[in-house]
Length: 582
Ligand code: GLY
Image (cartoon, rainbow, N blue to C red; front, side, top):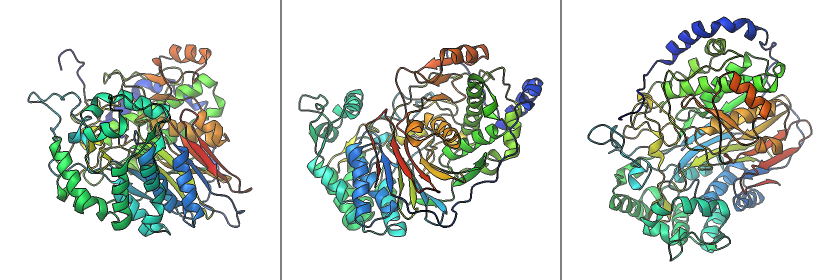
């Protein structure tokens, strides 16, 4: 690209070695604040805990209510997860849906955990260079707009898998609230209205989407107008009656493929028929006695979270002044995001060195390169501006009274996904193909760069930042996650540190965020996240600060205190969600 800074790809391990040499001079400072010996990790579950209530936190009150309705009918957390996901597909179509996918982190009542990977997959006809022009340059908007940007959805397959393997209720029961909401409608609200206004240009090119999300005059509906989605209700009904086959085969599948191809996409019936969720072992680690369980690749979320926490384990954050504490956390983010860019991709296609990146020895090398007095410049690899992290994607947290828990982060990627709804299905297509690296080191919509590990290939899952996470201490447990693209990882990192420090669920969700993702070499922060004094100190250390024009994230947290049985459910006040204790 003419005039663009040239990028150099430098292997992470090499960078670490260079940094340790270059920055090691300040290690006397670091040694003074090394962490004390860590307490023993919390056990997954101790005996004889008091009876506790169920709790749900999600991004929309109607979705939380759908989950509660299913718990009241004898469903467990996994049935409720189906109900909440399906309801969000209806009432928060800007953020997730049947046309998308995501990650369901499950905790069984015995404390064991697993992850259902329902991430979208590249169609069989996808090619490495499909979003590049003849000169090898990215074609503007090609990986974000219209059906060609859509991967094969995973969320409908997750519904059947969760219900069959882990739930107690049939799909037709768990999907009933969502079907009702799609048929009877829900009232338009401000955040969805602004998402529609932002994506209006795309929606106007998709008659089915325009029919649902725009007035006859082509404008977003007024606040409070009822949004009805009869085609989506029919598709949900097909799922309720036939399970995954109601979506991936038969009438709905034929309509999906015909609609995608009519819009220039490349899906086939075989792509849909071949889609399967994958059950994966979560990544696990410890931070100051807390046990962390999170999403493994193809999400980068858990690995980057553990990478940062392992680095921070080498410091006693409580001993720092507030600005230096934030500086060290920012430096841990910088290093974790660098590893994300270099190493991570779909583990079914590339070898991801998870054990290495999440090891204490590796973190010690990373930590040794951190100077408490000075930011490490990222300008070895020049960056570009990232858009403000938004509320694309959605998260919900559920705990049932038996101790089953779900942390689910699900998505159609950017606001209203690709902006294309397939006629007769009510399915709004994702634009998750943009989460691949269309070109090595070319930033995607979140300003994230990646290498060949995340290159496009048929049937491959694009790398994600979604970070559904369980944090367990000896006293209790937090179920946490958030939307926000690359910012998700930093938000969950801050939430983890805050929970370990004893913060309540309500304070964790409203905590002001800051974020560093290696490239661009900038610390984004929300208004109020840094005091004027902290800004002065961080700038003096060399941090390049950029205040965001708006808030980001929509965190949903459930906490459970083991001794008292008290549970809390908190929904981020930046959104309009609801935390219910039932
Ligand atoms: N689509 C956003 C992510 O998965 O990171």
